[in-house]
Image (cartoon, rainbow, N blue to C red):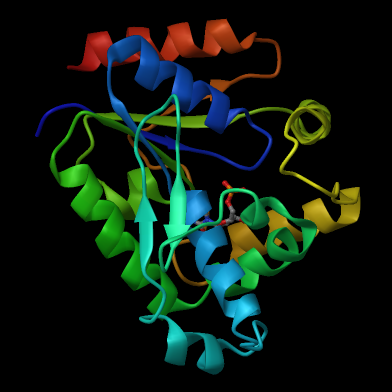
Length: 220
Ligand code: DC
């Protein structure tokens, strides 16, 4: 398998910026699996599917056609041919995504798509279960963390910088999402036993990228 870098961690740990930066530095593709769960969630809401009803979500899990672009300079995501990169960042989607991503039928569908994208290798994949479930054989696995305070600050900064993130989440909404993502039954957020943990609390983005690039060079 050519190079696959699995980047897992909670929201606000700096995964997205670091993953894109590593992909650029090493000339790799980039897959944002969180955007895929968000896209399915957007579609369920758009179709009027009650997202808190796992059976209703499971019944429609096979229907949306999700296509992810893997250029780190221009990541893209479409559902049924429609560009949803902006609407998947709204508060409505963000608050519903944990319920939808906890449904095993949704995960099975998206994990299959993710494995197809990963099969060619040469890719940085960010998510919650990449090192544990999606790509357990990835030669490089990183678990990125940061203190609760640093994560809250980053999220606030990201939202301010991202014009598509129309509404900020409250602290309690964010805490609820983190709790649901790490306690759900189906492949919860977890550090793989062989992942290298990087705490980004005291590191700049450039330092995190450098650390992952170094790891990739050592481990491959
Ligand atoms: O990374 P993000 O915040 O955009 O992810 C959105 C949600 O998708 C997150 O709350 C949990 C879910 N997710 C998941 O269950 N598994 C992944 N590999 C990636 C994201």
